[in-house]
Image: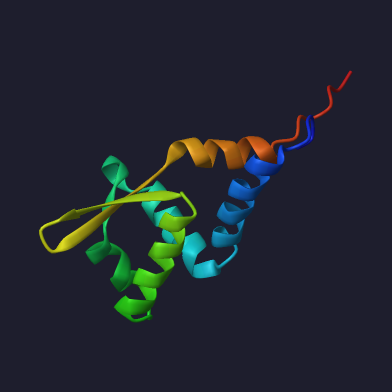
Length: 103
C-alpha cells in the first residue's frame, strides 16, 4: 500500500479479511488460532476462553472462515482451526511501511 496501488480484486479480498478482524472477539479468536501450539486448535479449547455462547463463537469462526483467514477440519465431534498464513502475510505486507534510513 505504501509502494504500489492495491488492485481492485485484491482490495476486495483484503478488505473482507480486515473487516472480519475488526471485531474484538474475532481478533482474539484469530490470535488464539494463529498462536496455537502445533498450528491448530480445537473449538473445544476456544469456546471456554469467552463468556459467549457456543453458537456465538461458531458464528465468529464462520466469519473468519468466510474471510479466508482460517481453515477448519472436522474430526469426530470436534472442529479444529488453523490460520491460513498466505492471507495473513498479505495483510502484514499491505500494512508494512519501510522506515526511512537514518544517516
